[in-house]
Image 1: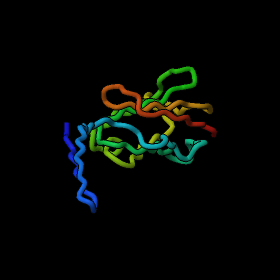
Image 2: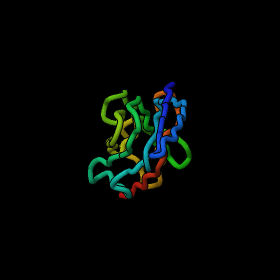
Image 3: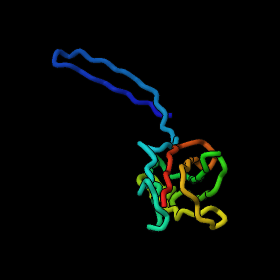
Image 4: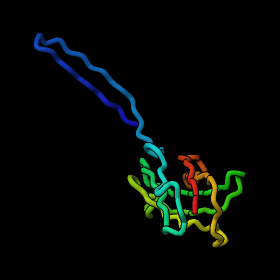
Length: 129
C-alpha cells in the first residue's frame, strides 16, 4: 500500500493538502485481443502464431479445443519465456494435436489462462486445407 500526498498553493497563498491511499497490484491481464495469424489457417503452409500482450510476466497455459469442447492441444509456458513475459508474445502452433495428428477442417477455440487457471483471453481459429 502506498500513500500519495498532494499539496498545492495558488498565487494568493491559499493552500490545501489531499492524501490518497493506493495499492500497486501485480494482476495479470491480456491487453487487447488474442490474435491468431494467419486465420483462416492452412496447416500445409507452416506454423500459425497465437499472439497477445501481457501486462506482467506470468506462467501461461494455452489450450486449443474442438467446437465440441474436446481439448486437442496444450502448451505450458513458464514466466519469462516467450509466451509468458510482459508485453508482446507469439506462440507457434503447427496444426497438430497433442498426439501429433493433423487437425481437420473446422473451427477451433483457443483459451489462454495464467498458471493458476484464471482465464486471460480467448479466440477462434478456422482451419481450412
